[in-house]
Image 1 (tube, one colour):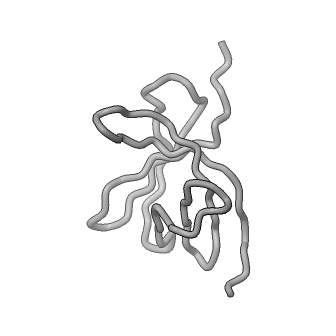
Image 2: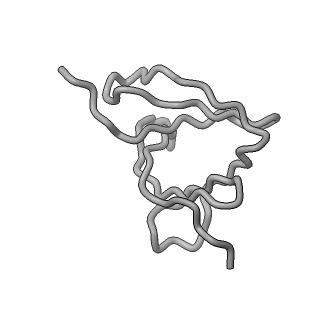
Image 3: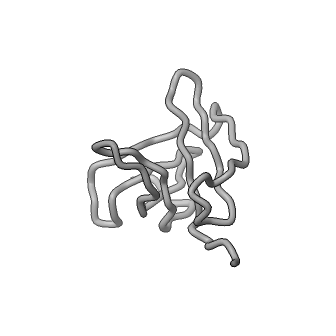
Length: 90
């Protein structure tokens, strides 16, 4: 069993059945990888990203819901957008 560095909820921008939006995902940061799960009890990893090869940039939240988000890109993979879920101030 590997040791956990950090874990908690993040929001991931996803599209399913033609509907796009932010989905709450359980995130585990361990051994230079970011793993996303549906919830803390899930055994199936929805997404894994090796951070040592990823490009991380600040991204604009096109929905206008959250203050900021980041874009994670790994070579030859689809970009992933994440946010902590901090709301924009009105």
